Length: 420
Image (cartoon, rainbow, N blue to C red; front, side, top):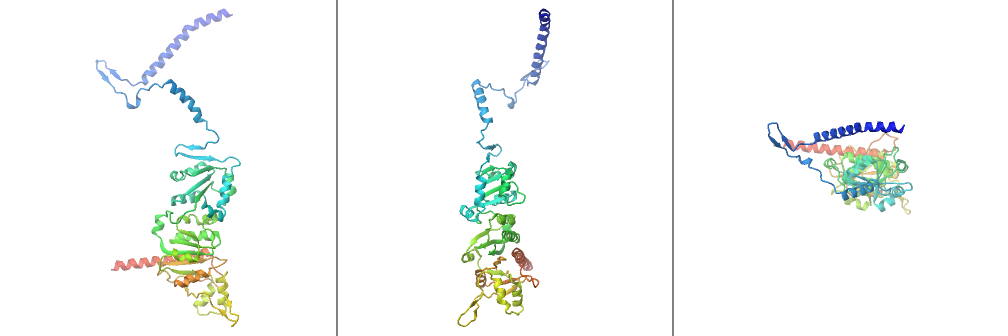
């Protein structure tokens, strides 16, 4: 049986050699067709020289030693260890991946969610891609970004991310610390912005008005955020917050402000003695009247015994009446301010409007400042039986009324110039 097999193999061997030779010759012809000729010989005997293209220079032989070194180096580059951060080759940025038990997110969130720690560390929390983008555009300095998906960070300007700690965490971890109903998967920790160093939008600066808003005893974060949006929309030159107000950089205020923090300068935590230092010269301070019934009586010269009762609501956490033990009469020490309807002209000079909180009202210091600058109470008439308007609503009405009055003045001035 072995003899016939050997005979068959010996008969097939020349045929296999022929097939191998033909295959080798075919490959040589294909290789020759791919080559670019350097010299062409025509049938007439003419010889044409052709230059080799610069990008098709002959390959240099790679030394054997260097080839071996590259083989040894490649495994080291392609097999990163778990502790090394990932790299973005196109941007040159790196990010860390939080492992189970990583407490960096919880430690930072504990600091930025507490006002004392926030003020001590000088850091704020911004959540959401739009708010973070507005902050970066205004020149706010980021410190750390926590994100659940890499594309959220890649949407941000690359030049703003250099030197920033980028940490990828699970979405569940962000959800646990988020104040949003539907978290957006990215949280930024920024240095507390300085209103002097922030770059505000040019359109905002172009439409800025000689109008300042002073917030007095505003404790509700939602109200303050809405008021800041109205101030930015009306074109206020700045917003001053006195001591007793909620922190302007609290997460709930930032969420309600919708980016207004980076459109209008905000000066936080001021003492009343320093407020005049932040006002333009010759500014008149007006107080929003949150006791419309008393003001309507005063306007109609029908004041009665209800004046003091209403003044007690107007100044809720100050004692509004003192009794002299000798004469048994009350001392009238409350500053007397003239009451004016909000739709009458009150913007002939640079103006500042004081808005008080709904719970505590305005402070005695605000009334004294208004009296010293020649200001008045501004009345927004309401239907009898209604206690007062919401602070954010009252602020919006007064600010946009001031804007309307200033626009009319500008139009009248331009009309007078055209006549002359």
